[in-house]
Amino acid sequence: MPAGTARTCMNGLNALSGVGLLTVPYALSEGGWVSLALLAAVAAACWYTGILLCRCMDADDAIRTYPDIGERAFGRTGRLLVSAFTYVELYLVATGFLILEGDNLDKLFPGARVTLGTVSLAGKRLFVVLVALVVAPTTWLRSLGVLAYVSATGVFASVVIVLSVLWAAAVDGVGFSGRGTTTPLRIAGLPTALGLYIFCYGGHPMFPTLYTSMKRKSQFPKMLVICFLLCTLNYGAMAVLGYLMYGDGVLSQVTLNLPSARLSSKVAIYTTLLNPVTKYALVVTPIAAAVEERIRGAAGKGARAVSVAVRTLLVLSTVAVALALPFFADLMALVGSMLNVAVCMLLPCACYVRIFGAPSMSSVEAVAIGGILVLGSLVAVTGTYYSLMKIIHESV
Image (tube, rainbow, N blue to C red; front, side, top):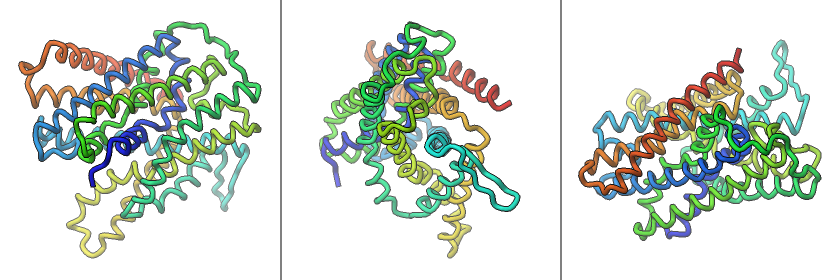
């Protein structure tokens, strides 16, 4: 059933509101105050590429999804490329969910340890495994209608987190006197900051679905402006709050800095924990469905068992990666630089130019698309390199 503008706007806000909210203070500390302008620039660029995706859909009524756009532009290769970037992005986001849960639960329950025979798990590693045990059954569900309804609370949760952090600063005594908050620009940290900023706007795979669900598709650009504006204000507010509170000492997730004994901190952390638990199944289901589609013919009557096995193995693999690379900010910066920049900036521009042709574009369009391609390519190269180097350095 077609959705109204208000409902689609809420769905769009939910697509753009995620765990990136916790990393923006760290991103600001990495890039300095001037990098806030880059947050706005990234938001504007991702808004425009969202519009380009919808124009691509108007070129052919058969287009319903993002991979369809890739196929319309570049044939089978385009579909495979879009699908690959999207699925790897979703996989690493799911892995990031487990890392985030482990970090925050370890803050709430420090020193926790479980020993079973010769096997002992403690701290973050223990909580990563426990959370995986909780979310694994949710991935077995064929219908995710209930989970989708619960995950819609993500918009409300994002606002609650910002307000809780503000309360911790203004009422619970943390204050706004973080060290190092006078630095205008840190060139060395810009690749990380940009990667994290782009990660915040990774909702493009959902935009075609939102567009096709609207009753009045002409309202989509206006709806998208509202979504990006509200989310950018929320991200900007959290970035400034967290940086003023903790300065250069702000951690990869600002909730890890909060005084755990305070009620405001508990509200922020528990609200943070809710979102990944409810969204994990929604994130991994497209990957599982793609794998199941490939082996459906061989499954026969055991299709249900195969589905459970595939999804369980998928969860186990994300646990293994989360335990091996427990660096939330660096992993999300890598996702932003290597994957989100492709899905949200480079591929929409490339598909649009391929479908409509360069001669049909106005000079303003050509400049805008050229600028986005240059910015995206720069972030993809420098951000991916710096993120990988930081992960390798922290792993050894």
